[in-house]
Image (cartoon, rainbow, N blue to C red; front, side):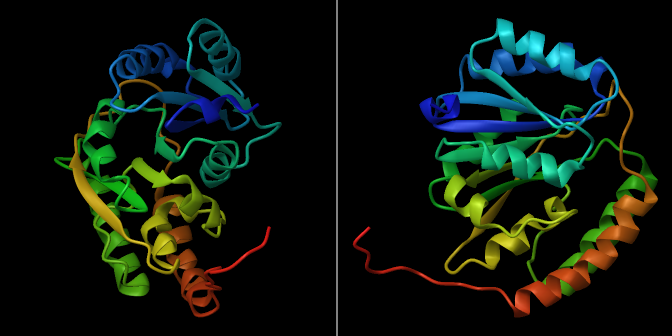
Length: 243
């Protein structure tokens, strides 16, 4: 039996070369799970790390109830790690947070009250603690994406999200899809999302995996892929079955 089926909420944490953050992750999630409003577990997805991340994740999962992990044979990217986490989750709700802890698991408590009503609840990074150049890149990228997708989303790069599992599994996944979650959710008939301001913190350990190309150039091209996908999206609703 999939152990996540015993929980109401599974938090997916993609990890790629974040060995310096593992102790902080253990402390943050141990504290949060002890008082979370829904029965919650954590699923670490090691994205083919080349440092000591995998060994340290396996050790913390062995000594903490509610901590689980899967690992890739080689690096596949953030979107693949999120997809794998969703595919391996059996709880009704699935969340996502980055391993750098620039957002806090405690702020899932701001999102969860809306998770039964909205298919996606996503954070907005209030008072971002990044450099002025990174903030400029994000504003530019978000503005262009809104123009192309008409999703109305403010901050799709915020790594704090809660999705209804059934909705999450129907999302068409591709490399870079993590930046398009609101737009991809809206492709589903009747689906809605809500944005909630959350806290943002400076990175204190490890190295960012994002740079100019994967923050601006690739998302620019992905917007055109989304426009094509939107025109050809398949929607259906089964109203009778004898299965």
